Picture 1 (cartoon, rainbow, N blue to C red):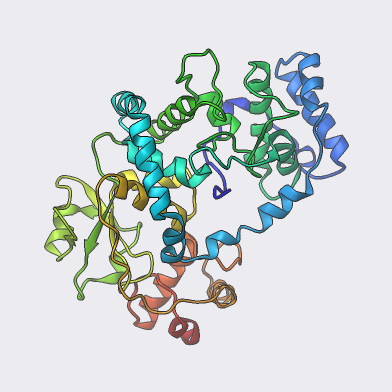
Picture 2: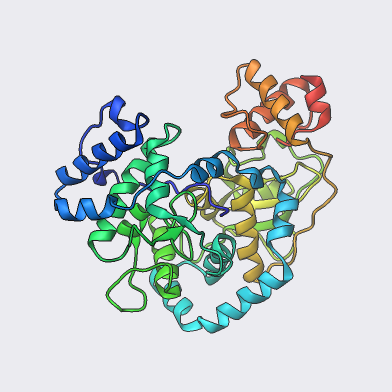
Amino acid sequence: MLRAFLLSIPALLVAGPISAEARCGGPFGAFVTGLKAEASAMGHPDATVDAFFASVRQDPAVIRADRAQGVFRKNFIEFSRAVISADRMARATANAARYDRLFDRIEAEYGVPRGVLLAFWALETDFGAVQGDFNTANALVTLAHDCRRPDLFRPQVFSAIELYARGDFDPATGTGAWAGEIGQVQMLPGDILAHGVDGDGDGHVRLKASAADALMSGANLLQHLGWRPNQPWLQEIVVPEGLDWSRTGLHTELPIAEWVALGVQARSGDLAEGLTGSVLLPMGRNGPAFMAYPNFRVYFDWNQSFVYVTTAACFAARQDGEAVYDPGTPDPGLTGEQMKLLQERLAARGHDVGKIDGILGALTRAAVQKEQSRLGLPADAWPTPALLAAL
């Protein structure tokens, strides 16, 4: 699955403070016993708790998948060209027609355009065809036991128990992504509890089998995350050669009128008046360029990968009528090993780049831009061999 994780976690599902010793790690059996006790303390009947955990097993494959998210080492052009294929675009258009009345309903109730949901539906599961074959209960408990991100996954175990109690999840047979996400738009149990919608009216919220449930739940979540109706999210632009590159990136948000005064133009049509935006250069000043409007920031609450969300936003824009973006002629980038070396050197200079993983994430981009400014290089946040050599 492409998703790394979803950020929205209902804090109300955590029953009080958990000791550091019990939060993660230790013998797996003892850890499960602790989860069972906590679930019972939340008010779940012992029979429900015992039945939920009866088939739960630790899954080493989940940990391997968590440690090997190599897909995000691709640059934006590589990833987006692989994902936004002609076939997938055609199937998105066909699904838009097939579910036309459903999308009309979604747009009226939640203000989320069909192209945005079609993009997530396509990227997450290829329109429901590839939803993942990891046992969801095993995945969640395994990741809660693992000490890398227990605060993310432990609450999801209790959310899954609640879904089970409602009759909307089977821990023995329920499957999904390695990170515990379920259904055609891949939502975590806590988000299903908080934002799941019975779109087909059968009395249940089942995101695996029901496209209506999945799409309406996804729209409800996006609305909760701050999606603004009737506003754009990403638009291709042309930037002037003399632009102050240090002002590009999501950290700088200006009124569109100011960007226009600086020489930024839409590649086609006009930029949205009355809004703010950020100039986004996924591969530097010589590569593709976009205006990121406030709605684009909502994407990062769905998935934190810069490459993923920019691709999803481009897919949605294509469905909304935009042309294929101009790739430009980006300066050569870095290999995975070179990126790790760059991150090590940036960290040695005091920058927070997060994990040394060879992935050009938000922290690494910010550090790159600062070092480019310091060295007198164009500060477009795109790391090049020249920058690596200068460090």
